[in-house]
Amino acid sequence: MSDQTGVVLLPDAGPLITLAYADALDLLFKPGGPLVLVDMVLDEVTRNQTPTSQKLEHWAKAHALPVLPTRIFLHLKQMQGESCAAPRRANLGELAIQEAVNDFALESPPRTGVFLFEDHTARNGPVIITDRGRPAHVLLTIEEYRRIAGGGHKIADLLAMPGIDEVELEIPRWDELPRPADLS
Image: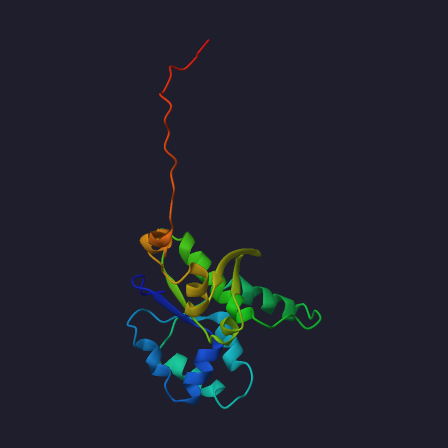
């Protein structure tokens, strides 16, 4: 990639297709940082003839957008070349973007990648993001996060005991004198 500064925007297929339908793909340049297409995502949005596939292909070429190679896409192409049974295709774009973001974190200095995707999955519940097959992160809606986090209460509010001034506490009087401790 030519631009190593700033936050890298990595759009998934859903936002690309939606923006292509709306003739609004250039909105992806508004954040100001580099925009990079992941090879698997570009393949997903251009491999079949659809109302948006040619538009997306021409747009990417016209803006000379860099295409980030991934092991996910390489593996898919190898499986297709070996004429194996139909390889898995579901969620490969998301997996390839996760691979890219993980690779960014391992670079020196690390880069930050923002994964732009449609949120219909997150609205149905937490989305588990894995790192090499192990759960590493959880994506939640802000509403779900606030529910789990308790709404941001202050410690003073949590320690306050409403109605405590109405409780009567009777402490009995202690008339005995203290005596020395027997340490034998």
